[in-house]
Length: 345
Image 1 (cartoon, helix red, strand yellow):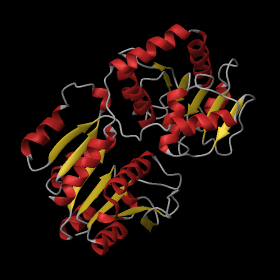
Image 2: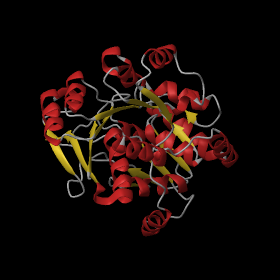
Image 3: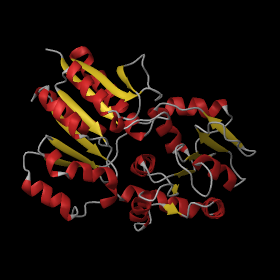
């Protein structure tokens, strides 16, 4: 019997980490199970979604602001399981239960985590999966411990990173096409086209900082932003290829989101700049273990930190060792296994 799985990630006109995470899970599931699982998405109508790969219900806005449309999509598809990523409305949970669906909530940030701890919502959740790698095995805060104690029917599970294995072959080919090789470039991928820091978009901030002049810089998805001399813009790419480029870079200049965790799991050097307030805590947690460099989100601070990192190869080697010592896991396989188990439960 074909099982039906519905992904409901937060999404906007420029995409986002939640949508990319859902796509990684969906692709891996399809690769393992083929047509045994019917996979569908509910996404913002303007999101950069690969409609040639998966069927999607387009929304007029993000799922958090399109409650009626999300509930209707759930009722129409009648999935065996729904995976909500950072979006969790009561109306959607109630629609999922009415359709006989199992429900999972995936949260990756503190402000989204508390939605899954709402007592009303927890009663409708089979599982709450938390991406909380910055805790590094520390005891969860008391609201999570209380939630686990009071509502034992909701299974709490903790994960580190979610990413596809690096495609080193394609990465090497791309680098060769630009006359580059492993270790011969820095990678700038600050993400976040939807917000402003130091009066500019994240990529514009990186470009204004300029970076060292001793190596070229590859800028991922720069959009319309002008890039300095020595910088090369690369279009949006698969996670496998991005991981290959991250793994081969001398230094990765990123924000404090999912890419930082992916890079540290690969054990590579990072300069992490908090582009949103909530990212600072995660970056500080890793910096306390000397596993990442950081600085304020200002062009002068980024420029100084980037120059200092490039000037001392020994410090970059130390960062690699400290990143590996964190012991972070790529939990994509574990998350896929958990979804498959949920679908047949």
